[in-house]
Length: 205
Length: 286
Image (cartoon, rainbow over all chains, first blue to last red; front, side, top):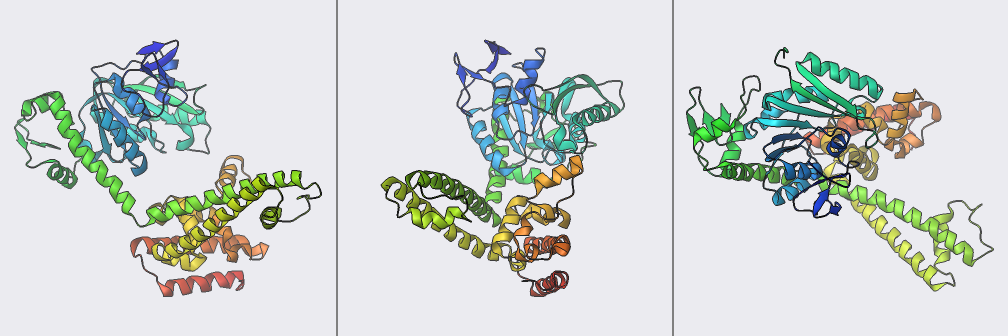
């Protein structure tokens, strides 16, 4: 990934959401994008030109646009019509984004459109985030990575973020994933955690 | 296995589906994919089919179909009859906020030009003294005051229009609590679709989210009413039964929302029954 003066940036045509530019590159603000925050906190995360990505919860396509700058192609799933409109506008400028109107809790509705991917990225504000991730594991290539952006406040407001975090990790492990790494996104985002997993070949699913 | 561009049988033979993007989309929609047996597409499968000359061609064709689908979803959402009402209510609430803010600021300004005037002890100072400010000696002050009055007029017209339209889009709810309150409740729920799926208990506390979350988190008393407090039956009810009235009204509103969503026409019997039930608790308070 490209860094300029400690900022994460991405190549590609700018002006997606009035992002700042630096030496012709688009600055990828970690305070706005959780994936950028994760990349700032964990320098090992890498997006490469040969990657195919399944992105759940694409929203307005701001983070998607940065991901698309780095990878081969992005399957961007978004449910709500309003942000979908913005996502389409972003996809018009980037031919490697496949925008899909779909509900991440019902992958069977859009499964015929999606191929196997190297990276499964999930950023949906839903209570059952672990369950949604598990439903999409069939799309992950052997050796691929799944990144879950856990919005603890969307999962359960009555529990503390730490409890939600621990429970989610337990659920993922029980379902046969191996959690490689996990961290809170402080100081960029509060009560948000990133969980990075791989499919455990010995695990039972 | 069925994919967007065709189907592939067990021995890897690919049968492409006919037609352009609209036909392919219709086909995908009619598919019943079972995720337990589904094998997602792999590069080998796509290449093995020989339909697409290269990777770019594959993505290009795929995007034609998914973009067409997305456009349809967006168009359908915009066509729902509550879509414009929703925007109108939001605009109305925002206008209220703006008018209040501007009036507050204007009174501050006016006080400087007229040292004998104090808004302190005057009730409802803002709106009541607006006409007085329009007669101020300072021309710019007068001008701004007139503009705010204009804005107030526009707000009034918008409110009337919201009421009128609510009668058409959500007739049963409007009949129960009046078009304006009904429209506000619908807007807060995020539209008629989501409101129709809400339990009465949620409808009861719509608009009291802050109190509700402090209740869940810190155990403060639960809110009795949110937006439905704006209805006279709730705010005129005696304190002791106010929560009860709110609960029953919310329950009836939830039913009304479902009638409005699924049937879309006024059900006079339901409304009459509901009114009687609420009046029985509220003691017929008007």
